[in-house]
Length: 322
Image 1 (cartoon, rainbow, N blue to C red):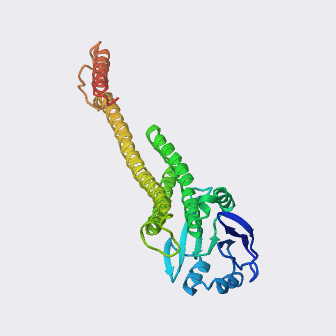
Image 2: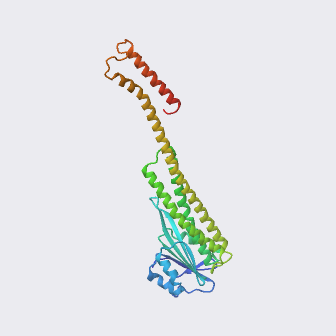
Image 3: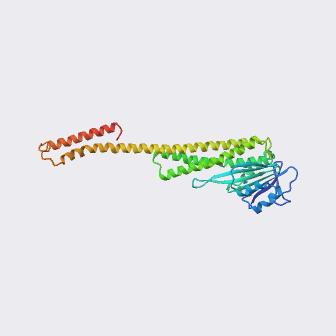
């Protein structure tokens, strides 16, 4: 079975391992369970459904693994869906899901597509028995906080890429590959924002609503989770704005460069037009050509061409066309 961990806790301390049998899941007064599953099949999950009498709609959502972040109340129990995220190798953000069933004496976490196991989280919570003794609601806070903390490295890595691209746009031309990557990052950030909004809403409900299995003493902890999501969402929105600015600046700089090149070509064309025009006149088949028989005619014409060309060059240079 895809059981990552299953333990019984009492007074904030791990008491024993809990095999998924009727005897192993039997609890004594003051004890509660934390069961961690990874992509269980329908048959594997059926025993827990019968033992804890989980609501059929929540079970259906937990096994389908195509949900947006949300919180549902079924009698005296909670069902929470959270979206995990991690950065792929090709600038894509890879998403998974963590479903949490919370009862008065149990927590069941189900991971789908998430590479970050809860082993480290479990060790951190077990190292704080005074907080863990709160029970299932504090474990729920730890799971959500662990998931939200995984968002920060994604934003950090994308931020480094965006700043690098911004500097490249200022220093030189953006290549076609750079522009494709720019739009890819913008699209991934937009998808990420669609996850952050519902995640913040879930944390806000947990800290503000009177929900079953959530003690008033634990509610402030969910405010901290909501603040973390809000900060990540703010940075994500700022990065999207920067990407838009990079594209606009790149276009403006490209237009400016094209304008500079156009002015240079126009200036050289004007300079070259002078000898072309004079040579065109003397190339015409006239019988009485001016200065044709004058000894200094050729040097005079060449000097006139040179004077005009130099004058045009100096004029264009002063006006910064060259």
